[in-house]
Every structure is written in C-alpha cells, then in structure tokens.
Figure 1 (spheres, each protein chain N blue to C red):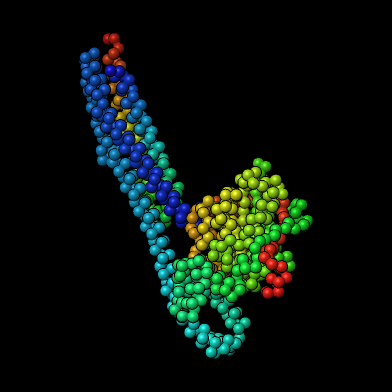
Figure 2: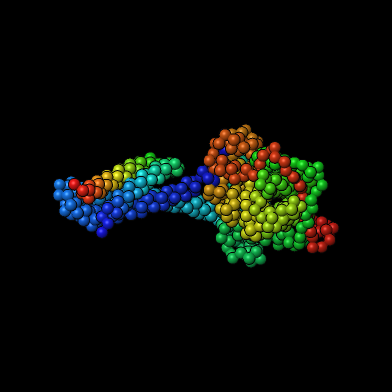
Length: 512
Length: 83
C-alpha cells in the first residue's frame, strides 16, 4: 500500500483531543471522590452514632459492648476513607494524573507549533536570499542567451529540455516546491531589494490592498495576481461581470447512479476534463430513504491556461484569484448550478437546506470547492456540507472544522504543495498522500498531477476503506455514506458555466 | 431524633459511594480505549490501571463501612425488641 493517511478521526489532533477529554474525565472522577471523602467524614462524625450507642446501652445493657464495637469500627473506617490512603488521597492522585496528561498534550502541541515555525523561518530565510539574487540571476541568464543551457552532463540543451529537466527535478525533489511556495512572501521581499522590482511590487501591493511587505503566501499571491493584472492578465473582473449557467441536455439526465466511491468521483473528474466540452459542472442528486436528497457537485480542473481570462471560467486567472481567497465567477457559477438543480427537484431554499452536499474536484475543482466551503453564506445555505479534493492546494482556506474534508495528494505532485503548508491535522480533515515511486509511475511532476493517476489513488483509497485500514478513512466513509453506492438511482445533470462579458464577446475574444 | 432513620440513611449513602467508586473504576479503565500517544502509552496505561485498582479497593472499603453501620442499626433494632 503506497498511501499514507494523516489527520481525521484517527489523526494526531484527534488523539490529543482524546487526551484532553481523558484529563477532564480524571478531574471529574476526582471531584466525585472528594464528595465521597466529605460524606465519609460526616459519617464518622455523625451524632447518630453516639446517640445509638447510648440508647442501646440504656435499653439493653447486654448489647452495649457490641454497640460500642460497631461504633468504633464505623469511626475507624469512615476516617480511614477521608485521609491520604482513602478517597481524598485518591482524588489527589487522579488530579495529578490529569495534570500530567495535560502537560504532555501541551508539550506535544507546542513542539508541533515550534516545528512549523522553524520550517517557516528557514523557508523565509532561503527565499529572501533567492529573491535578492534573482535580478542578477535573470540578467546573467539573459546574457548567456535563453536558448542554450548546460546540462549537468555537460551537454547543451534547449528550453523544452530545460522544462523537462525541471519537471523531473520537481518529481525527484518535491520539497523544493514547499520551499518556493512557503517562502513566496519572503521571495517578494527579497526581490524588492532591487529598486525597479520594488516599485512594481509595492504598487501592485497597494492595488491589491495588501500592506507591504506581504505577510504570508496568500498575500504574496494577491500581489503577484495584481502584477499580472497590471500586465492585462489574470483579472477576470476587467472584462467579465457575470456568469451564465445552462443545464445541458443529455441522456444521463433522465437516469443515473450515485458515484460508486472515490473512484466514481475521480472518473467523473476525468470526464469533466474533456477539452471538447469545456466549462461543465456536474450535479448529481441521490434520493435518500427519508425523502430528502443528497447532492454531489463535481467541479472541473483548470481547462484554459491562457493568463488572459476568456469565456471559460475554469482557467488560470481563476486559479490565482481563488488562491488569494477572492470570489471567482467559477465559484458563483458552481453555486448557481447547485441551486438550479435543487430548484428543479423541488428542494430549493428551506426545503433542501438540510440536504447533505458534497463538493468535489480535481486540482482547480478542489480549490473552488474549498473556496465555497470557506464562504459563510454558502455554508449557511448548505450546513451539511463536505468536500473531497484531489491534487488541490487548499491548506490555506479558512474551512471551519464543521465541514469534513478529504484531500488526496501525490507526494510528487507539486500542485497541492503550492499553498506552502501542510493541510491542518484535525478530526474532520483527512489527508491521503500517495507516493507514486512505489507504483512505477512516470518520473514527471506534471504527470503526477493528472486526474487519471488520481483515479488510481482513489481506487486504492476505496480499497483501504473496504478493508478498514484506517480509522480516519472509516470515519470519513461513514459521514459520506449518503453520497455513494453505485446501485442507487440518481439524477445527473451537467451545467455549462460561461463568463458574461461587460462588452460584446467578440471584442473581448479579439483582445486575447 | 430518628436514630433508625439516620443510620439507615448513612448505610444507603455508604453503599451509594461504594457504587460510585466502582463506576469510577470502570470509567478510568475505559480510558484505555483511547489512543494514548505511543511514547506515553505504557506509562499512562500503568497509571490508569493502578488508579482503577485503588478505586475498586475504595469501593470495598465503603462497603465495609456500610456493613458496620448496618450492624449498628441491627443492634439498635434488637435493643428495641421486648426481652
């Protein structure tokens, strides 16, 4: 098995939460024991004991000795239960144990935080230096010409081979992407050491509403997006103001089946990536035994890599905008596709508010799912929301713990590393990482991001769920049960999402 | 003063505390089901096992207290019987 499961119900955070709960239980038992000790003390000092002994001696002198012995035994045992070897002492021992458990939990969490800070500081230090050296490096590259580089073996190679070498390098040294992404804010600070870069970056920062210098990866991405916007790219708001959502007629609308499992979701992701039918979002309605419906919304990955936004909202500009936390037309279209499907099924508004909803997507589809899950208004409309992502950098999204998340990632895939940090370890966020080296996959970072390779990983995860190999996956599968079951009838509808331009489409397209 | 009633109340209270200690022992043992961090596992399991044992002993000692209280109550009742 090449998968590694972290977080979720069986993860470290859940274990530490369990230990916290254990400490509270020990404290509560200790409090009860203090009560027991107090009552034992009251029993030993009860006037009823002496009164009973006197009455017995007066009424039946021959029983006086037995009564005296009984009273002495009661007092001895009652007082024995109060002291260090009794309930009082046990209460103290339990309080000490609870305190030790809390200290261990606190130390563990502090060590985790310190490790994260250490890595972050190291990334910032390295990338700041890289940023300061970058202008000189670029000038040097320009001087020797961009068409020829020397390979490690001494051969001269062209740009295509350089790209291939970088692709292989990203596969073999995946942590380098963490370094680049995690230190992107420091990289910009380093670049700003050059006066020309500083002018552009500070202006872009001002335009993006980010206080210079950027404090984290998200702010750095916003600044970079603004640099792109200044060059007429990556900003959909310049030419587009809305989105149209159209249900597509297809045979599968009439009858379909719920996804068989994670593999079913990824099979659909491969289908939605079909370049001949761009801009499709798939909404599947799965009727539930109680008369309600579960909804699976599948969002495609990036389909248009042109930095200048076009009619298809699933493009590079949406990638960059969504990563900064900004609202995107792709997310608006996805939300409206779900609303239209629910309205068509008579589940709009309050009627379908408690219907479970699963947002799922590969790459950008996962980013859009995460951005919707981070939107309080969307969560208010769909409180039983959960998401599944494959190859998506979503660690930085403010998804609350109330939304269960399952993230599939490949160790060699650079895309999920672009957020610069690991996914949160919490009971409702499970991350599955697969090492492709154990599968004999192609040595290519680009190939490791493909939806078809993620389909193989999803099949592997389905297998792990079937054989109960992970407590975290088992817990996730229980929560996601309403969405799956290949033999359950379901209604499948594809929607085409298209950006609506602020001016005639022909002039927008002419500019691209 | 209702001595019989007072003693009966003390007996019931001691039995209640004995039951409470047995329940506490069960609760402490149930903590074994949680996933202790591996590095602390053995240490905490030993501690919880010891505490559960002590709680069961305490339950027994409350039962002994209840027994002597009950004995005193029975002597009191015998003293009230006509000779």
